[in-house]
Length: 174
Image (cartoon, rainbow, N blue to C red; front, side):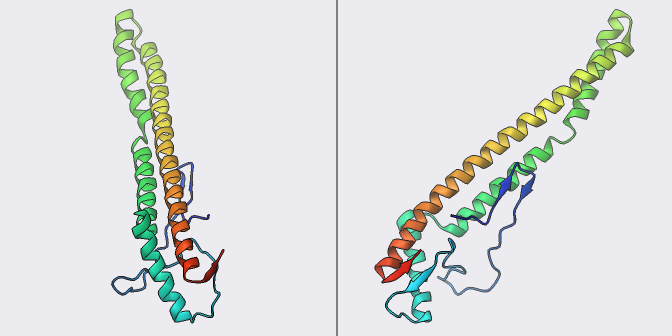
């Protein structure tokens, strides 16, 4: 089932289109978020079909405790948070190099070559920062992957309930 969110290596976070048209209280702006093809098998009017889809959307939310709009917003928030966390580690190689150079200079001063100690320390510190950033990115990607998997499971469950309701109202749903 297609999702409107794609997260690829945390580098690209897709934007959600939730719609901006005003919606009456108790109505959902997109009553078919999984883009099902719904055929009125008993000649239901477009107005009746919209009302039935609205009712089935609400019923599926109650039956599964999953609201597709909220689930999508939560997934999007997780992806943005992960990207922010990775961005926060930007510059960790430079900071690590600076710390390493300072420590290396101090150690090098004891042995009589502060410059050489600083260079070795800067290299080691810089690599440490690179590894920290890589580890942070991997951890955040794992978090996003888990959130995507949970989202897909929730949407599969919700979609089954939605289809069941529509089929019970004499629609052909694919």
